[in-house]
Image 1 (cartoon, rainbow over the protein chains, first blue to last red):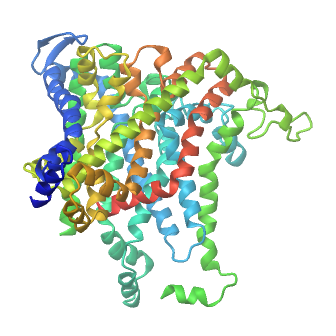
Image 2: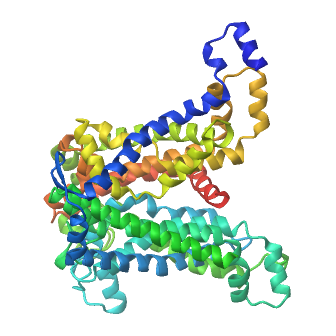
Image 3: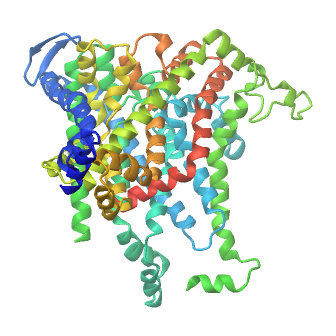
Length: 304
Length: 290
């Protein structure tokens, strides 16, 4: 208080007497204002819309559960769920173990060139889903694409192997692997570097083999980051949209590249039905929150 | 110490080599699509699929003189991609600056200022983290339509201006690197609270600032769905939408597609290589300490 009084006495601007309390709200202000208008209000509207029949952004009438019933009865929605689930499983069970393995290799004490490897591994992520889709469209092209050219030369895989017509999900998993394996590796590496080495050495003296040391000492030490990365890649994978949408110019042959968010986009912005789009959004949101809660619960129980 | 045995002799040791036997090929695999893209952007149609990398002449020797700038010439003169390029720079730059300041201020306030309701606000920020962006797509479109902001850059920028995860990151960074004693000292010197944030806290938050500017710049640069839905005029579109649309128009002209893609990816890669030290370490430390 005396500092504020002193400032007044010297005659500086009244901003100086702003107390800590009001300064908190001033600094929070821009964030709160934008979030209330562009997150909280739309969130409220998404509930209203999900229970309304809409005709473009202007007119709505109450429709009860109709949108949800219609979505859940649409076989196309379940195709989208299946594709998205397959892609997500691929990301979690193929990509993340690879990230962890690469991080453990880079974490070897005294390894030369660690920073360079980390930089190279991280780079693809910058390309982003849209431009990776542009590259993927040419890379996985039949007959002429580099993937088939190389696989044909190395393993005799037929040149017209139909990645983008039939094996869409595997090609999406491969592209996502290229984009994010190094990104997740950076997180794992940072976590591994905080693992107490004396703990690992103690286990070694007690006769634990490398696999046992990894499973019983390293994994528990990095569990918070592990949970965080699993959650992050689960949530990200479930929202897959741009990669197949741009690479296949839409849902692809027989909707083999249709995802939940692409279905939402089609409903809302190709059919112009914002109510259906919001219902899909809520199904996705509740699914994500439910699955995340289960994951956090499991990891908590294992730690306890 | 496992390290002792290795350090004793400096010569060849299989224990030191094997990580490279895995990491080196993996790194090449990671770089392969980028290297391929860089060369493909300069290849004429007749050479595009003739060889994997550099074009070759009739005898099979590498013929660098067959590389061409004509795709870029057409991109700038016929397609007008320069406009999309500057749109992307404007949108990404504006978002990066404003979102970083907005999140830094809020994160700092949550971490270090005692004010009524700060506990509630922290819970609010955490709650905002779990909202998946696609859920807000339809209502955001409706809101922007009502506000008369369709086809206006504000529609693309404002909803992204205050990401809750940014507030969370800056809160963690403040707890970690802005000591209370320093703030108290500044208060005793009679500095205003906003002045303390700008002159004492912000410089200490520089590493997180660098990382977050990069994250938000990238997020906008690579964002497709928001401009696709909220903008209409082709001349207002950023690269992500403009290039994706080219895929339909030039669907058989892979050279044009790859030249446009390289043009879109190159600025981000250059920016990253300039800022990478702050970026990778800032990102990782935020995750570990969080």
